[in-house]
Length: 234
Image (cartoon, rainbow, N blue to C red; front, side, top):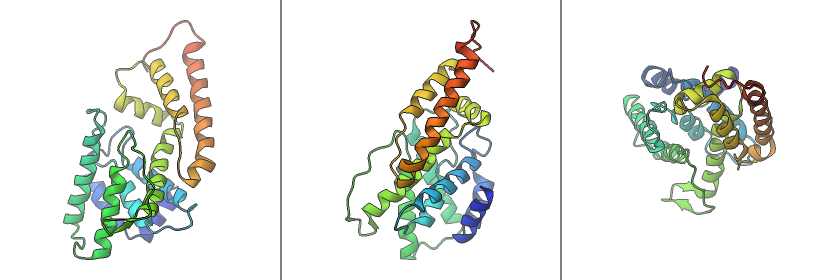
Protein backbone atom coordinates (compact mmCIF):
# COMPACT_ATOMS: atom_id res chain seq x y z
CA UNK A 1 0.00 0.00 0.00
CA UNK A 2 2.90 2.39 0.67
CA UNK A 3 3.72 2.54 -3.05
CA UNK A 4 0.18 3.70 -3.81
CA UNK A 5 0.29 6.28 -1.03
CA UNK A 6 3.58 7.72 -2.29
CA UNK A 7 2.20 7.79 -5.83
CA UNK A 8 -0.78 9.89 -4.69
CA UNK A 9 1.42 12.27 -2.70
CA UNK A 10 3.60 12.84 -5.76
CA UNK A 11 0.72 12.99 -8.26
CA UNK A 12 -1.11 15.71 -6.34
CA UNK A 13 2.01 17.52 -5.05
CA UNK A 14 1.12 16.93 -1.39
CA UNK A 15 4.64 16.53 0.00
CA UNK A 16 4.54 19.87 1.83
CA UNK A 17 1.21 19.02 3.48
CA UNK A 18 2.42 15.57 4.54
CA UNK A 19 5.57 17.15 6.01
CA UNK A 20 3.41 19.66 7.89
CA UNK A 21 1.26 16.88 9.33
CA UNK A 22 4.29 14.87 10.40
CA UNK A 23 5.53 17.90 12.32
CA UNK A 24 2.28 19.25 13.77
CA UNK A 25 -0.27 16.46 14.11
CA UNK A 26 -0.76 16.00 17.86
CA UNK A 27 -2.37 12.57 17.47
CA UNK A 28 0.61 10.92 15.80
CA UNK A 29 0.84 8.41 18.65
CA UNK A 30 -2.89 7.69 18.84
CA UNK A 31 -3.60 3.95 19.10
CA UNK A 32 -5.96 4.05 16.10
CA UNK A 33 -6.71 7.55 14.75
CA UNK A 34 -3.09 8.26 13.85
CA UNK A 35 -1.37 9.46 10.70
CA UNK A 36 -0.96 5.92 9.39
CA UNK A 37 -4.76 5.54 9.53
CA UNK A 38 -5.17 8.79 7.56
CA UNK A 39 -2.72 7.62 4.90
CA UNK A 40 -4.58 4.32 4.59
CA UNK A 41 -7.92 6.12 4.24
CA UNK A 42 -6.43 8.34 1.53
CA UNK A 43 -5.31 5.32 -0.47
CA UNK A 44 -8.59 3.42 -0.03
CA UNK A 45 -10.71 6.47 -0.86
CA UNK A 46 -8.82 6.98 -4.12
CA UNK A 47 -9.16 3.28 -4.87
CA UNK A 48 -12.93 3.55 -4.34
CA UNK A 49 -13.05 6.74 -6.43
CA UNK A 50 -11.48 4.90 -9.38
CA UNK A 51 -14.72 2.95 -9.75
CA UNK A 52 -16.57 6.17 -10.62
CA UNK A 53 -16.91 7.43 -14.21
CA UNK A 54 -16.08 11.06 -13.37
CA UNK A 55 -13.48 12.04 -10.77
CA UNK A 56 -13.16 15.82 -10.46
CA UNK A 57 -12.25 15.77 -6.76
CA UNK A 58 -9.26 13.42 -6.58
CA UNK A 59 -6.94 15.92 -4.90
CA UNK A 60 -9.67 17.14 -2.54
CA UNK A 61 -10.29 13.57 -1.36
CA UNK A 62 -6.58 13.05 -0.69
CA UNK A 63 -6.24 16.22 1.38
CA UNK A 64 -9.46 15.57 3.31
CA UNK A 65 -8.32 12.04 4.13
CA UNK A 66 -4.90 13.22 5.31
CA UNK A 67 -6.40 15.84 7.64
CA UNK A 68 -9.67 14.22 8.73
CA UNK A 69 -8.32 12.89 12.06
CA UNK A 70 -5.57 15.45 12.64
CA UNK A 71 -5.30 16.32 16.36
CA UNK A 72 -7.88 13.67 17.20
CA UNK A 73 -8.99 13.67 20.85
CA UNK A 74 -8.08 9.96 21.14
CA UNK A 75 -11.24 9.18 23.05
CA UNK A 76 -10.90 11.86 25.72
CA UNK A 77 -14.09 13.48 24.41
CA UNK A 78 -17.13 11.59 23.18
CA UNK A 79 -18.41 14.43 20.99
CA UNK A 80 -17.09 13.98 17.43
CA UNK A 81 -17.80 17.68 16.79
CA UNK A 82 -14.51 18.43 18.57
CA UNK A 83 -12.53 16.08 16.36
CA UNK A 84 -14.03 17.64 13.24
CA UNK A 85 -13.26 21.13 14.57
CA UNK A 86 -9.66 20.13 15.34
CA UNK A 87 -9.19 18.75 11.83
CA UNK A 88 -10.62 21.85 10.16
CA UNK A 89 -8.50 24.17 12.30
CA UNK A 90 -5.39 22.16 11.45
CA UNK A 91 -6.23 22.39 7.75
CA UNK A 92 -6.68 26.15 8.01
CA UNK A 93 -3.39 26.57 9.89
CA UNK A 94 -1.50 24.38 7.44
CA UNK A 95 -2.82 26.29 4.48
CA UNK A 96 -1.78 29.56 6.10
CA UNK A 97 1.69 28.44 7.21
CA UNK A 98 2.42 26.79 3.87
CA UNK A 99 1.41 30.07 2.17
CA UNK A 100 -0.99 28.35 -0.19
CA UNK A 101 -2.67 30.67 -2.65
CA UNK A 102 -5.92 32.06 -1.21
CA UNK A 103 -6.58 34.23 -4.26
CA UNK A 104 -6.64 31.39 -6.80
CA UNK A 105 -10.33 30.68 -7.36
CA UNK A 106 -9.80 27.08 -8.47
CA UNK A 107 -7.69 26.26 -5.43
CA UNK A 108 -10.09 28.06 -3.11
CA UNK A 109 -12.99 26.02 -4.49
CA UNK A 110 -10.96 22.84 -4.01
CA UNK A 111 -10.40 23.64 -0.33
CA UNK A 112 -14.10 24.42 0.01
CA UNK A 113 -14.74 20.82 -1.08
CA UNK A 114 -12.04 19.52 1.30
CA UNK A 115 -13.70 21.22 4.28
CA UNK A 116 -17.10 19.79 3.38
CA UNK A 117 -15.65 16.32 2.95
CA UNK A 118 -14.12 16.48 6.43
CA UNK A 119 -17.37 17.80 7.93
CA UNK A 120 -19.32 14.94 6.36
CA UNK A 121 -17.06 12.35 7.99
CA UNK A 122 -18.36 13.41 11.39
CA UNK A 123 -20.01 10.52 13.18
CA UNK A 124 -22.85 9.63 13.12
CA UNK A 125 -23.06 10.23 9.38
CA UNK A 126 -25.83 12.45 8.12
CA UNK A 127 -27.54 11.39 4.86
CA UNK A 128 -26.21 13.02 1.71
CA UNK A 129 -29.03 14.53 -0.31
CA UNK A 130 -29.08 14.02 -4.06
CA UNK A 131 -28.97 17.25 -6.03
CA UNK A 132 -27.52 18.17 -9.39
CA UNK A 133 -27.33 21.88 -8.63
CA UNK A 134 -24.21 23.68 -7.48
CA UNK A 135 -23.27 24.65 -3.93
CA UNK A 136 -22.80 28.39 -3.84
CA UNK A 137 -21.97 28.24 -7.53
CA UNK A 138 -18.83 26.24 -6.70
CA UNK A 139 -19.49 22.53 -6.63
CA UNK A 140 -21.75 20.05 -8.39
CA UNK A 141 -23.68 18.45 -5.55
CA UNK A 142 -24.05 15.13 -7.35
CA UNK A 143 -20.32 14.84 -8.00
CA UNK A 144 -19.58 15.97 -4.45
CA UNK A 145 -21.82 13.23 -3.00
CA UNK A 146 -19.97 10.59 -5.01
CA UNK A 147 -16.64 11.79 -3.60
CA UNK A 148 -18.05 12.02 -0.06
CA UNK A 149 -19.39 8.47 -0.23
CA UNK A 150 -16.02 7.14 -1.40
CA UNK A 151 -14.25 8.86 1.50
CA UNK A 152 -16.84 7.73 4.06
CA UNK A 153 -16.66 4.15 2.81
CA UNK A 154 -12.87 4.15 3.00
CA UNK A 155 -12.91 5.47 6.56
CA UNK A 156 -15.45 2.83 7.65
CA UNK A 157 -13.59 0.11 5.77
CA UNK A 158 -10.63 0.64 8.10
CA UNK A 159 -12.80 -0.76 10.90
CA UNK A 160 -13.11 -3.92 8.84
CA UNK A 161 -9.41 -4.68 8.58
CA UNK A 162 -8.93 -7.13 11.42
CA UNK A 163 -5.52 -6.98 13.05
CA UNK A 164 -4.72 -7.28 16.73
CA UNK A 165 -3.20 -3.79 16.65
CA UNK A 166 -6.30 -2.19 15.14
CA UNK A 167 -8.70 -3.92 17.53
CA UNK A 168 -6.58 -3.04 20.58
CA UNK A 169 -6.20 0.53 19.32
CA UNK A 170 -9.93 1.09 18.84
CA UNK A 171 -10.71 -0.24 22.30
CA UNK A 172 -7.93 1.72 23.99
CA UNK A 173 -9.06 5.00 22.47
CA UNK A 174 -12.80 4.95 22.93
CA UNK A 175 -13.81 1.95 25.04
CA UNK A 176 -11.11 1.65 27.68
CA UNK A 177 -13.63 1.17 30.53
CA UNK A 178 -15.47 -1.62 28.72
CA UNK A 179 -14.69 -5.28 29.24
CA UNK A 180 -13.16 -7.02 26.24
CA UNK A 181 -16.09 -9.38 25.89
CA UNK A 182 -18.57 -6.50 25.83
CA UNK A 183 -16.37 -4.51 23.46
CA UNK A 184 -16.12 -7.38 20.97
CA UNK A 185 -19.87 -7.94 21.14
CA UNK A 186 -20.62 -4.26 20.46
CA UNK A 187 -17.92 -3.96 17.79
CA UNK A 188 -19.37 -6.95 15.96
CA UNK A 189 -22.86 -5.44 16.14
CA UNK A 190 -21.53 -2.12 14.82
CA UNK A 191 -19.84 -3.74 11.84
CA UNK A 192 -22.85 -5.88 11.01
CA UNK A 193 -24.82 -2.67 10.49
CA UNK A 194 -22.24 -0.85 8.36
CA UNK A 195 -23.69 0.15 5.00
CA UNK A 196 -21.55 1.23 2.06
CA UNK A 197 -22.77 3.73 -0.53
CA UNK A 198 -20.06 4.04 -3.17
CA UNK A 199 -19.87 1.73 -6.18
CA UNK A 200 -16.73 0.14 -4.74
CA UNK A 201 -18.26 -0.20 -1.29
CA UNK A 202 -21.38 -1.92 -2.54
CA UNK A 203 -19.51 -4.36 -4.78
CA UNK A 204 -16.34 -5.10 -2.80
CA UNK A 205 -16.11 -3.67 0.73
CA UNK A 206 -19.03 -5.64 2.15
CA UNK A 207 -17.13 -8.90 1.51
CA UNK A 208 -14.31 -7.77 3.82
CA UNK A 209 -16.84 -6.52 6.38
CA UNK A 210 -18.59 -9.89 6.49
CA UNK A 211 -15.26 -11.74 6.79
CA UNK A 212 -14.19 -9.49 9.67
CA UNK A 213 -17.46 -10.09 11.49
CA UNK A 214 -16.85 -13.84 11.23
CA UNK A 215 -13.27 -13.46 12.51
CA UNK A 216 -14.34 -11.40 15.50
CA UNK A 217 -17.14 -13.80 16.31
CA UNK A 218 -14.60 -16.62 16.27
CA UNK A 219 -12.20 -14.60 18.45
CA UNK A 220 -14.94 -13.88 20.97
CA UNK A 221 -15.99 -17.53 21.00
CA UNK A 222 -12.42 -18.76 21.52
CA UNK A 223 -11.59 -16.24 24.24
CA UNK A 224 -14.85 -16.00 26.17
CA UNK A 225 -17.78 -18.14 25.15
CA UNK A 226 -15.79 -21.39 25.23
CA UNK A 227 -14.50 -20.91 28.79
CA UNK A 228 -16.06 -20.61 32.19
CA UNK A 229 -13.57 -17.96 33.33
CA UNK A 230 -14.06 -14.78 31.34
CA UNK A 231 -10.98 -12.59 30.94
CA UNK A 232 -11.99 -8.95 31.03
CA UNK A 233 -8.66 -7.33 30.33
CA UNK A 234 -5.49 -7.93 28.36
